[in-house]
Image (cartoon, rainbow, N blue to C red; front, side, top):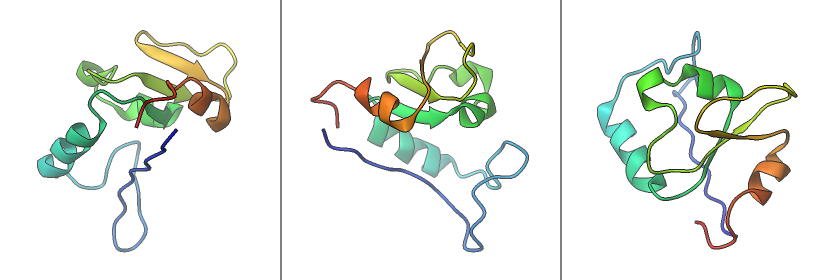
Length: 95
């Protein structure tokens, strides 16, 4: 299985503020969509919570949410309790 990591950070290292991105760049969102459509996306529960409700689950992708909360669930999300478990939930041919 090939694993691709996508993240964004500001020059000062900031990756988020108050459960949101500290910037609004539509071209970044479009680029993320192009790269991930048809692929599983593994994210943390706080990232899931930060997504606007209209984008939950991310359409056209398997949404895998990693959380330590044993009873957490959300419509459209597959739950994993570790990164390893999340990776194991991905089809072997996914990129």
